[in-house]
Image (tube, rainbow, N blue to C red):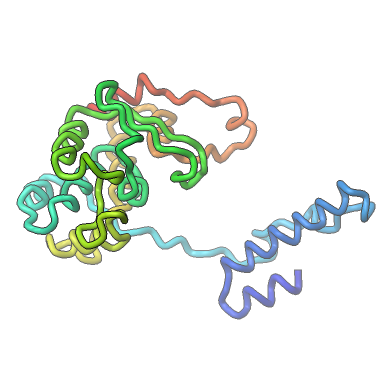
Length: 235
C-alpha cells in the first residue's frame, strides 16, 4: 500500500492503479502455487487507498448541433477520404481507430455486415455490426477511391497507412468545432440520442461494443442482438 501511495503522490494516479493490480496478481499467483498460505492483498480495495480520479470526458456534439454540422461535412473541401470516414464513423458509432483502420476484407457489402477482428477492438473481442443503407453508400463511394487497396481510408500521404489519429479532429476544427467536438464524441451523441428515444440499453451497449460491467451477467448474457441492431442502425 505504501509503494502504491508513493506512486500516486508524484501525480501518476493511473500508474498507481496499474501497479496495485499487478501486485495483487503476484500475491494471487503465490497463493495458487503454494508459495504463501494467505493473500494479504485480498481485501485491499483500490478505491479505499487511492484518491478518486476525475474522468475527463471528450467534448461531444449535441443532437441540436447535428443538423447544422451535416451540411458542413458535405461541403468539406479537404481530403474526401477524411469526410467519408467521418460519415462512416457517425453512421456506425464505432471508435475512431476502428474506422480509420478499416480493411476491405472486413466488409460483406452484399450482406450489409462489418466484422471487426478482435485484435482491432479495444476489448479484444470480435465485433459484428449491421450496416445501414447510408453506411453502404459511403463504402461504395470509397470503393472507387480505395477499393484496390487494403485500407478503406488510407492516408493521402502514405497510402499503406491509415488516416492519422489527429485527422478527424483536425477536420472538425476546420469546420468550426475546435475544442467543442471530437470524433470520439459521436459515440456519446449516439448513446444519448438512442437512449433518450427509448431503444433497449442492451442493444445500444452491444452496438458500442462496451464490456459488460457485471462479470456474472457477462458470463451468461452473450447475445449480440444483431437483429435489433439492424433496426437500430437503420433508424
